[in-house]
Length: 410
Image (cartoon, rainbow, N blue to C red; front, side):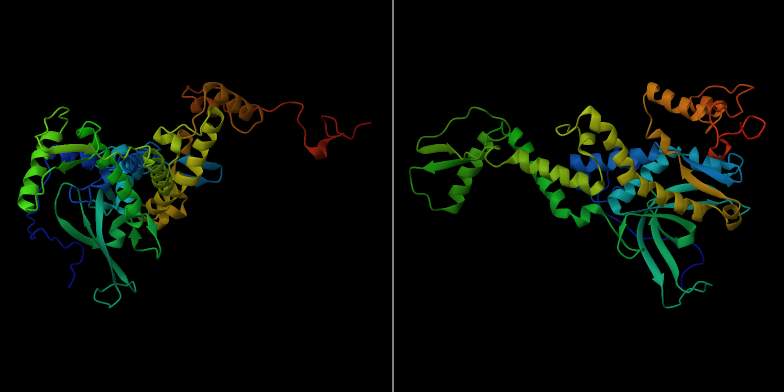
């Protein structure tokens, strides 16, 4: 029988090798646990894609807003406002928290956050966690008003304990999913493409270790059939030839010939660039973000940045907003118009000249007030800046031919 809330499983003994504290701390910054697959994270393109996505989500502030009759405003009076936008828990800033969440989601296919409740039943803190498994109670083992209760197994970084909780006690952020519950990580779906990149990097590392010299063939003038003797000769030349030893002697009776297979003949650059572009496309990362400016110019760069927001980031923002709005806010809060929303304007920051033209056009057209434009620029408001400004020559179509008093013109 499941426990009512949490089931601790700290009794399990794990004798697997552990990383150092420094290595664990570095991985935790990105929400990666020490026992997660590490080979993919060592691949530069894969790591860069996850880093770009997690930082893009983390640097876009998440605010609690409220829809009112006069428009949308930031709900700074709500107790969850600072928790979501400033510090989800006493030990993490909002940037660290959301970076860990997104990095784990991209690497594992699913991420979570544990909700810690206070005495009054209010959420007081959020902690990132890795999801170990999801179980749907379709047999009716648990007593619940819901038809199918969902139990989630998770692990909080730093505790080393596997725990379990009901679905509603966590915030779940899913990656690619075919059924809405079970998810798949990108690295498992396209394992072969990432493996090619890992092998290519290992080959290049070995080539540099050997002084950019390829494999060699040793020709023997005598006929040696004993496998042990052949192995001894291979080990001898292996020690002389490897690890950057540029000059070595060849005993009498042996002839050394290199096996010439250059990187150009193997189309190494073309294959590697194709693999890089495939991995980047899987994550929605643009090639200019990987320092590949071959097909990029100044005119297309701004459009690619907009495309990155629309095609890649908006779905991540929307999933976070919906999960936080439903999982952190009560039904009464949602009925009053409260919701979580990202400020995507930080992604689309333009030059001062362009920003000045846009704000002036908004103010002159009566769309925003002068004080609103000043706040957008980080300036203090003025006493007379809360009135809308319009051009005196602008009239409604139905008012054409009328004088200022509303009488028909002669």
